Length: 330
Ligand SMILES: [Zn+2]
Image 1 (cartoon, rainbow, N blue to C red):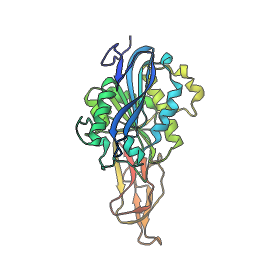
Image 2 (cartoon, rainbow, N blue to C red):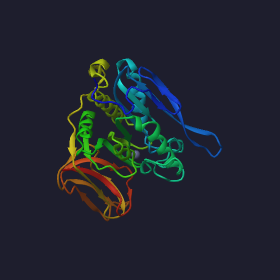
Image 3 (cartoon, rainbow, N blue to C red):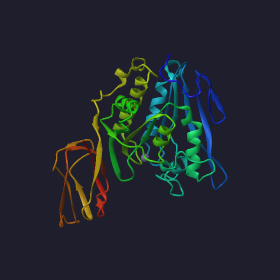
Image 4 (cartoon, rainbow, N blue to C red):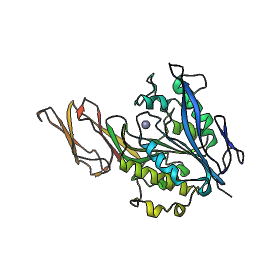
């Protein structure tokens, strides 16, 4: 007997107009919106329903349309799985925000942030309708969620899991992911993680790499992270997948942090960073300097406390107050 039962025990899962029975693998297109040309726009979803019952894990990516690493993580994950080796069900949505993905933008065409629009409404804005569809057609069937993001434009994130560490099962999932960093973070109103948690799912976010590109390290860590979570949930046996053979490097135990702080520009100018994502820093360590084009008018930035660099700006041209270096600390 599995530890987890999906909400509709033993009934087939219905996504869009498709009924998915145990032992089936199917790709579903659910209609999400209509273009100005009156063409329909749909969201592709892959469902793998294991031969055995178990948890129902949603893996979602690209809620922000320019955050692409999760798409590649899902592409590499799916061929490793099949109903015969799976207990429970995987529902993978590589591109949640299809309109924003098409315009290579973080936001929807009306500038709304889809990740502030959950759980959405049937008759609301485009963002609200997409959020509602994702909740109704996918999330309400699920027991667990891993939502994949990257840094926003001109920034880079070290591979990290964000979770509410005061929730034991979320903390356990976060640890099983095996990313270099786990960051305690409260759920933000309107986000998918928040809306999923509110209806009882165990939800974590994986953040890694930059917007607008595939990052090898972010993708490798994410792929093995998802397999680690599925192994933890009893959905797969890591041995079945020959993970030891496939794994390029064994992850170290995650560094766990309770808090984060952005070090901001104390003046405008050009920021010359002296640190990289993933590295540890000591209190008062030199992080870089801001100066004008000639190197004059210099201000030095130092770490206010010891921790790890989990994010950094990639754009050296900075205005007063811009976020430069993201440090996680305890
Ligand atoms: Zn994002």
